[in-house]
Structure formats: structure tokens, C-alpha cells
Length: 385
Image 1 (cartoon, rainbow, N blue to C red):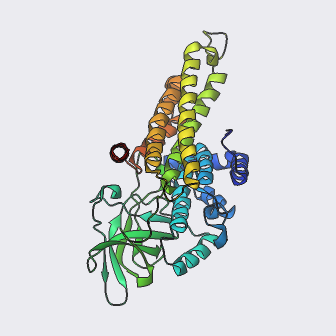
Image 2: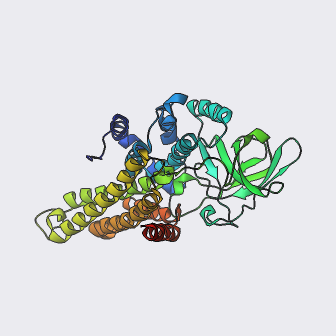
Image 3: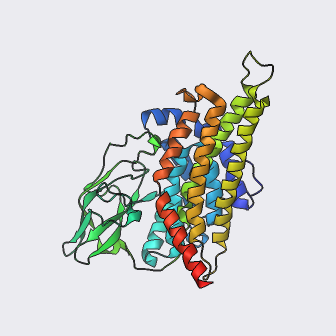
């Protein structure tokens, strides 16, 4: 991927590295999708190359990538393999969030930084079948009962991306004694924690986002690392790894359509279909949509990196997800129109891009919540002018 917006040294370094290994990282994507198999080889390569330390601050021994750096690099990775990008994105996004926001005690942050440098992979386990999206405020059915020495957790978490490869999970559970929701840092190999084998979705099949089952999982009190609604306040932009991944998938669909248009020549015409006005119109539409989505997302990430305490950026981060998804879905549709009926062939990656792209509609923030937030903020700002 080429863009004048790729500017920092770490962006250039990782974009060049990913492009150099594109063929290697793409080669198992079709098989992984068909078999709903996690991209173990890709994730291990990323860990070995230091990608899992990308957003760990330099003070802790990491690369210290900014949110902007992460968003740019994740976009490129998403154009190579969406399932790989979304999976590792949850880890690098969470690491960036934890250390920027200083969400945990210093001692736990120190310990966890060492684990990350040794190859640890983490994700939050928050969603549940009973509560739906955690963004809608439902109380977890998973509960943590204190027995005098440990918290004992029981429950089932859904949509646990990268479940097979995780070394740690941050589990949300209701604490009856405190009448609050807490987050517990748990090593995945602890007794009583089980990964179900039930991920069978149309899109993002290779993320293996199985249910996480907790049966009397014992957790030391010091690993109750967060209480919902407490702790330092900060504007968390690190979920922008999500639209970055889907922007990359839309870019991949565009690339596939251009490759097809430049090489496909029916015997009814004397040139490849790329010379046809209708095809050029659709290519122009795709390119414009990608440019607008990329500029909004990447400029929002850049602005976030330079925020002052008085600045407010929540509308831009919410709008970035909405715009990337809506424009990206249209890009994939246009790409499939260019390719025609052949876009439905299972051997072509474009049909995977179509299915994977739709999965993004169900990642946070949901469109209706984003629009409500944007509207309330706009009304509030207008009234205060």
C-alpha cells in the first residue's frame, strides 16, 4: 500500500516489512477461512518480529508506537489478511489502552510488560449471550464470588477473538459483594478455564472467536485489575484498530478488482475491461471512497496522538468507525460488480472480503450508538456556543 500519509519511521519500517512478507502472510488465508482455522503461523511471525510489543511504551521495553502508527500499520495488515489483523489488533489496541490510561496498578503493569516482551497475547472477554454488546450496558451474568482468599469466577464469554492463541484474558464479571463490575487478569491455562469449540460464522471465520467457559476459576485479589466506572479517565481511541482492519479489507477488495479489470478481456472487446467507461466509473468511486475513509480515520488517529486535556475527540473516533464501515461495504460491492459473477467463486478472495467486511458491523461502536453519541455531543456543543 502506498500513501502520502505514511510518514513516521516506525510506520515506514512496518509497512515495508509487511509488504515484503505479503505473500507469506496471505498464503493460508483461503484454507484458514474454509476450515475456520486460526492463522497461527501469521500470529507467531508477528510475535517473533516484535509486533506484539508495538504499542508497549519504550519505558517498558516496547516500541512505543502511537495510536496513529498502530492505525496505519493495522490498515496495511488488514489488506493482507483480515482475520490476522483483527486478532492481533485486539492485543496491540488493549496494550496501548492500558499503558496510556495507566488503568492498572504499577506493579501489575510492570509484570504484564515483561509477559508481553516474552510473547504474551491478551484480549478482553466481555461479551455474553445474555447481555449482548457490552457497549449497551448490560450487567454480566458471569460473576465473581470472594471466598476469603480468592475470587471464584463462573460464566461464559462469547466472541473471544484469538481464543486459541491467547496467553491472558481480561474477564469482566459482576462482583455481588461490591455490586460492581470488575475486570480480572487471568492466565489462560489456569484451572477451570476452557475454550469451547463453537465458532461457526459466515465472516471472520479464522479468528476462532470461540466462547470462553469459566468453571470455578480462582483469581488472586491483586488480579482484580479494574472496577468499571472507577480509575483514571481518558479518551480511549485505541479501538480504532477495528476500523483500521476493515479499511484494509476494503483496500484488498479494490486491489482484487483492479487486478481483474487489467487482465480480463472477453472476446467481445479488443481491450481489457479496465478501458470500459462503466468500469472506470466504478474504479473512480472505489478510490474516492477509500481516500475519504482513509483520511478521516488516519487524521483522527493523528489528532488523537496530539490531544491536550481540553480537547474532545469522541465524535471523530465514533464517526471514523461508521464512515469506514459504510464506505468499505460499498467499496467491496463495487469491486464485486467489476468482477461480476466470478466474484462469487469460492476460490476468489473477493467473496471472503465480502463476508469478513460485514462482520465489522457488529464490532464496537455499533452504528446506532455512534450516531446517538455524535448527536448528543453536537447538540451540547451548539447549546454552549
